Length: 348
Image (cartoon, rainbow, N blue to C red; front, top):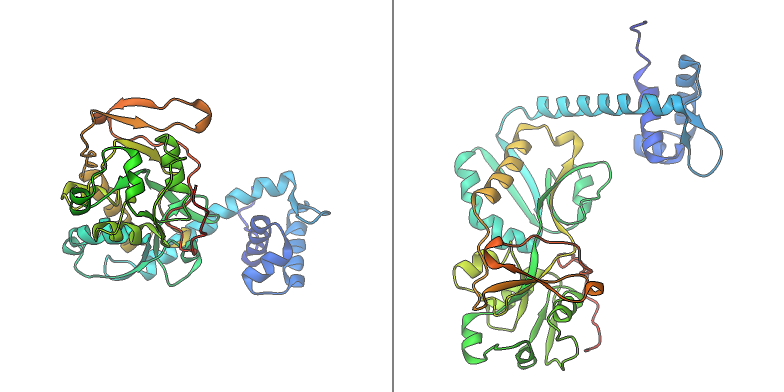
């Protein structure tokens, strides 16, 4: 077998075209002309004496020979990119730029950040409160901690934690305005961290979707609604990650024992080419070890059981012992950590 390798530029053109599905998209990515990409692909096909794409239609399709070549080429380029990142950032020192879901950054990461900085004192952190996945494609960002479905193309992503949602209220407010039943919520301000769908989901599980609500405030993300609850402004929906420590310290109370699983989860994600950099690797490893080293606090409620909400079609919720914790399943809730302006809905 010949050890001669095909030229690098045609292989780059082939990989980008196969991944993007069109010559034009590949040309934009590689900052060359449409004709240059076409010429390089033809040169590669001539060197192999085989067609790599099936022409025709809006999206190019790989031939069997092209499908055989693509995984090897992709793996090779990822290896080169990882080695380049390791060479240019060979030590666990320097600047690390991180984006994080606002509520997670405020209520979970910052209180624990000293654990990382004491271990790696030569790392300078830049923290940005956002849930925008566009950071994954920016050379100015190294790591993203996002709330979503984990489906971000051309990136590395790993599930960090699932979570469940439940009402939270400050002890001061609860002492002056009790919450003995779901119906008592009509005497409280409802604080939304989304457009209202999450509260609707919880109320449906609590058989309270039809009761007349009082005042409601809509906020752009869960950090703001949680902070409003801390300042005695009303009742918000907390979650098992960002509200857990607040409940453990007694700053917030979960007045009911009903939880509903969040629709999405927290993911750690970054570009493939920076994943192997030592400075990136140590922070990602710390994120997972910090989560695993601190057991999730149990809800402090007066009830003896936790009621697990099922999708509406199943009807009756399932009861589980409180000590078994929370194991989320799918639900129709919407991304509570998105940064788009909330869409106000009519009161139900």
